[in-house]
Length: 140
Image (cartoon, rainbow, N blue to C red):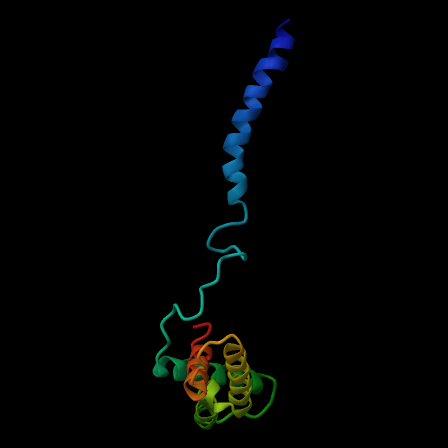
């Protein structure tokens, strides 16, 4: 009789209590500051970095590349010249002519769709500049 009461009454109550408490704990597994599946910040919601910080980080990366090259027995890189070259070349996505042309093609295609839908077309040059600015701040 005691076993029947335990099986029919106590075990279901214990199972429900365990499921209620463990459900929350199970939901937290794999979450936290070091978890891989974190929500990524949305583009445009972060402040752009300053040009001084950007140039200092570029300098550090070039210096590290030069140090690795020297450690392998190669020739050292002129860090200042390389940083200047990268800063001039990498002035942003707007400096890449191919990217600018591709963004322009996308804006023109979007304008054609807008006209077909009866909407006003966008100013192509202003929209290209806006999209390039968004790309410039992407991931910062």
